[in-house]
Each structure stands twice: as structure tokens, then as C-alpha cells.
Image 1 (tube, one colour):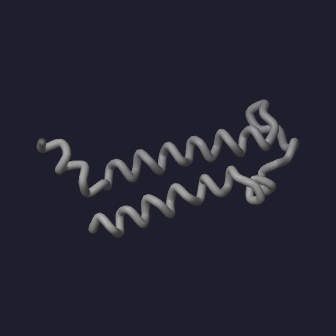
Image 2 (cartoon, rainbow, N blue to C red):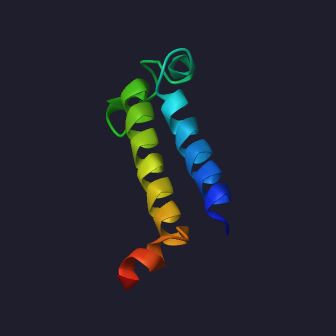
Length: 73
């Protein structure tokens, strides 16, 4: 995979969770009900997207084309 393609995938995949945590898209999850794991839905929404972002970063780290070059030095 080329570095340019990886950078585009990285930017796009991390932009989506960011936008879902900002206004106006946060209004999709800005509710008090239902209660999930004892949390109002809006809290669950934020925690969910933080976890999803973390998983995306882990996946992107695994497929990073420059990762092997840095370890060789």
C-alpha cells in the first residue's frame, strides 16, 4: 500500500468518529434514554466512539507501511 493511500485512509477513518462527536452530528446520540450499562445514551455514545477510534488506530498501526522501516533503524 502506498503512503499516500494509507494517509488518505487514516485521515478519512479518523474523521468520521470526530464528526460524530461534534455538533451537529452529536445530536444523533444526544438523548437521555435509553439507559445502557447504567449510563444515559449520550454518555454511552461518547464512550462508544472513543473505543471505536482506539480500535481504528490499532488497526491502522498494524497496516502502517512505514512501521517496518522505523523498526529496522
